[in-house]
Amino acid sequence: MPELPEVEIAARGLRAWMGGRRIAEVRVAATRIVRGTSRGAVERLCDGQQVREVVRRGKWIRLGLDGGGALFSHLGMSGKWVVRAREEEASASERARFTVGGRSVRYHDPRMFGRLVPSLDGAPIAEWSALGRDPLGDGIETGWLGDALRRRRVPLKVALLDQTLVAGIGNIQATEALWRARLHPERRSDGLMAAEAKRLCAGILGSIEATLRAEEGGEITYVEEDRSRNPFAIYGRGGQPCPRCRAMLVRIVLAGRGTVFCARCQPPR
DNA sequence: AACGGAACCTGAAAGC
DNA sequence: TGCTTTCAGGTTCCGT
Image (cartoon, rainbow, N blue to C red; front, top):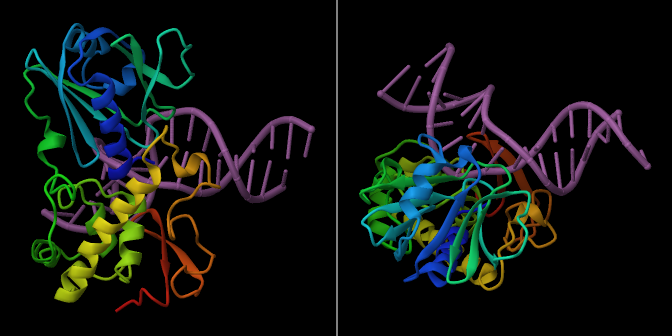
């Protein structure tokens, strides 16, 4: 599912396909994707507008339009931006279509958890304003992360999933970052030593960068669409040996989410 | 107030 | 073989 690296790749795609170009035609097919307002509102906002910039923060993308408005995009769990020839037929999961530069930029989202949110004056929507630091855009550093974690009293995994702390981390990146940092997902966030916060900071950035390298280029495939192409070290690998120490990877449910970790190199405390 | 769990969805995989 | 059930999880909402 889309987390920071996948959304970053989507933003790069949108920038290449739409940046500086005029939207000649818009069609939003699924009302559920828009929510709160009508699909017509999105169509009226974007129709004929030039895309001035494409910015990503966390798992959100903001398309800035030359008329002053903006369109915000969240991919939910199965959203994807793709480019197609204009004449190519719509797939069953197509929810919106933007004709730009002679090509067709399409939003696919089979499960429809994603959202397209119009902002008439370009002002940030509440979800965007609430986001914490973006590891790539803002950068994160050890001292800040350690302080922020110590102010909370939740399992580390829960803290990492909180978009108001570090924006863009989802279940996969949280799992991978904790493994890289050799930290147990249930360790309490207020009990971290400085050295551990340093490892976690490096783990977050390392995992995001590794995922970006593994997934960039070509059209993106989410791991649950094709499990044979799992680029992650331990996500989705419960019951298999830890790639670092060969102990059996354990899968638990934490905060309602599948959580894989190595009981040997991610000790409970 | 904070926290857990359900709901929202559909396609794929597992179970029978 | 084919139908049914379970699972996946980002975010919001609701009940305790």
